[in-house]
Structures are given as C-alpha cells and as structure tokens.
Length: 327
Image (cartoon, rainbow, N blue to C red):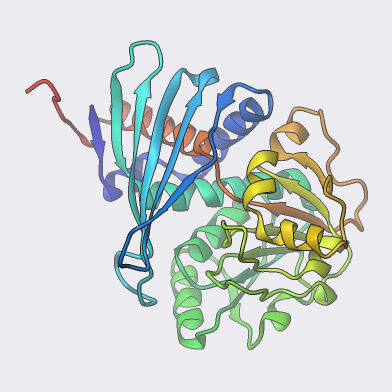
C-alpha cells in the first residue's frame, strides 16, 4: 500500500489532472456507475467536533474506499485547519488496499477541481472577473483553479478579516495571478463579477440575490449541512440550479432546502447533475443572461477518482513510500 503525505500529494495531484479525474467520476456517478451512501456525521461527545465518514464504490474505475474526517472548530490560521483526515482506496478486483493518503489536501484539490469543472461547463466562455468570498484553503485553491478553465483577468477577494484577505491576495500574486484586489464588502466583490465562489464557514447567507446580475455563474462550496446556507433564498430563486448528486443535495444542501421550505422554488428545482450535463442528458446554460448555480457538496466518487489519479502518478514518479501490511 502506497502512503502519500500532504507534500507528496501536492506533487502527485496537480489541479489540471484532478479536473479530468473529477469529470470522469461525475459522468460515471450520474450514469449509475457508483455506489455512494450519504455521508455519516457522528458527534464526538463532550466536544464541538464530529467524525465524518464518506464511503463509496466507483465501479467504472474499479476502485472503492472511504474518506474519514475529524472536523473540529479551530481558530483562523490554525495549521491543522478544521478538517483533518485521510482517504484510503482499494482495488475493486482484488480487494487489496492501493493507497492511504492525507485527506485534507486531497479534499481541497478535488473540491476546487469540481468547481472548475462546473465553471467550464456552465459559465460564459468569456468570463474574466472572479470573485472569491472567503480567505481559507478552499478560497486559495479556487482562485488558482478557475483561471485554468476561463480567461480570468481580475480576481476580487473578500473575507470577514481584511487582514486575512490581504494576505491571501498577496499569496495569489506570488503564485502568478496578476490583478488581485481586496474588496471592502461582499457586495463590492460580487458586483460586476462573472464567476463567484463562496468558500466560507458562515452558517448564514453572505451573498444576497439582489446583488446578482445576468450572466453570472456561482459555485457554492462552504456549506455541507442542511442547517447552514452561504446564500439567501433569492439567489436560489434567480438561478438555474445544478448539483453533484441529487440525493446529496436533497438531504444536505441548506441553500436549496431553505428555498424549497420558503416556497420560492419547487422541490424539483435542480436542472441537472453536472455529470448529466457533461453526458448530454441534461441542459446546461440556455442563454448568456442565465444565472447558473452549482451547489457543491462533495461526493466520495470525487475522492476516489482523485485518489486513484494521485496513486497512479505517485507510482509512475516513484513518490511516497510503500507500507507492507503483512509484516
């Protein structure tokens, strides 16, 4: 079994390769070629933390496994972040383990890859202004991923901490992004943007539907439980809605559940899964004026596909080290 640390994953799983891996996984998922139970959230008694388990089988790629996450609240800037975990993948033909890898970075990369895939599929091809709401790891990964699929010339960063937003903007410039500015308010970041990514831990809306303009594309990333929402119901009402998996969205997408409960959209408001759009079984953007919204919850098939891509690259480049479980 190959062990891949965070540093090894950074080399073995470039975002461009992960976009390709996630694309194949989402097409397979929507075609019924994956078995994906809903994620399990188990509170850890006496703490504010919880254990999150995401198992899955990706039959199309002959791999199965699971992601295990320890989710504990930590201060902004903590080196461990709020999500610490691992991903283990097995060969579906032999049942033997292939790899054990650090789960935090893999999740960062595959989530940004999924948003980039949705952006490439749903946004206007000429989109050039990107707004990032949030200042954490996902914000940084998204700011680097979206320019791989659209001709981004301007990036606006907003966060509740101006200091952290400025630090993120500086890091992005160091990594080659040119016109990166810090917005004073979320509304300032959003107005006039073509693509908006919400990557915060806010339990309440930070993005208002009244700020949206025709032609925008939204990636909603930060919320993954039914009681929280990063955008208000007006955002949902105005948008054409897409998800990674309908079953997950129905159970866990707080933004959609709130809008349905408020009666502003129907229970069948989802136009399609992103894999259905890619396969031509669901319509994508119908006009340049559409506001498209991709609700990203993350599914285990993405972790499995990303993990398999990283494992194969690591073997080819002789990265990581092998752990003999028989000893």
